[in-house]
Length: 367
Length: 170
Image (cartoon, rainbow over all chains, first blue to last red; front, side, top):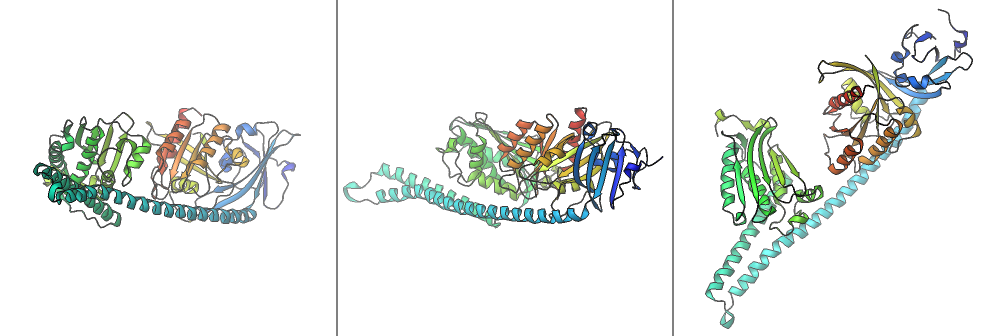
């Protein structure tokens, strides 16, 4: 092998390599221990992979700074590639650019770090403002939800306390008393939900865990729901496997999850809901699935429904404060599970609660 | 064994380098260190999901991040067999810079496969699934929620891209 004298541009830190074809096989090489005649230069300079078509061009002239990265070192390099018009050969000029590369990097690093910090500050400010708006909206919603049944109670009690000629008849007393009772139950339910939500937010909601059977829970809640007034005209079915599905969890809270999901399903098509409660054992963990034949929701409505007091457009007229799904979400989280909702307009809604597989118990472990 | 060039694109600070270093070197650092120009990583891997297992060699180009890709980025893209476009789930809008990068890649190399990485899934979740679906529909590519910290979905994403490249016979 003879060195091409044109390669002897022996500037300090510069290595020049001449390539005779676009396959990048080194024929003549500079002072680089990593290269030998016949080598594929792309193995030493992987930057050339993908550039084969460019290198084959008649007027190649490109400069590319890059850093060859290894486990323990970075090698900042600037690579210039030109075709020598006289010989037609490709020339690669590789230059060590460590010093200027580090200065440039520091400048960009400072700029990027400042930009990232600024973006984080803006995001934190936006989140704080959003939290403030949410709190205000939450208080407004709570006030509104409390006022409606309170008005019924106060108004009813006021009428019942009338004396003289405006005194209500005996049969009306029963009606007003029933209204007051129903409003009282609504208030109690709302306050219970608010307490649950608040405790789950602050981490004060404690699970009382015990071995339980998802099938027994589902069967019991489905029976209970069939007797609810809002279930009149609707059908709720339990689809259960042949044997118990054991789980370590808080049975009361799991019942609450199921009750809220079925209650939502029953409101989907008042008086005509067909809901199925399914219990399965999946590799991902034991599952409770509640599916209904309701109108379904758009993604935007679902995002609203997931928030406390969220009332998607289709559900505005339904009874309820809009806390049910938020509570289901929190209780599922507390059980280390996930809540996935599959829905689309006119395609019903399927709520899938998957519990942490570590909570699963085999039939032999007892309940 | 053929070697394929893969470019990794996206805004700065979204975790492109962290994803690559997790994949190639199986390491992770919390410290942010800006990438200047392009960093190259050469990595041999095996697509173990395929039968028989397929060995591949990848040169991964970690390209300097920017909200809008530059002309220099366009030059870096030339010759790539595929791209990974990275966004940061902790940001208010992870998607705009991803669209810009994906558009540029599609413009330079139409039809070449891409994967989208929604990174930092260990600390944030997808808040706008409809935006993700739009990207999926537009580019017909897989979307991964990745974490360079926990390594979640990192190797599967590179393997998916490699399989797409192989299936195109590139």
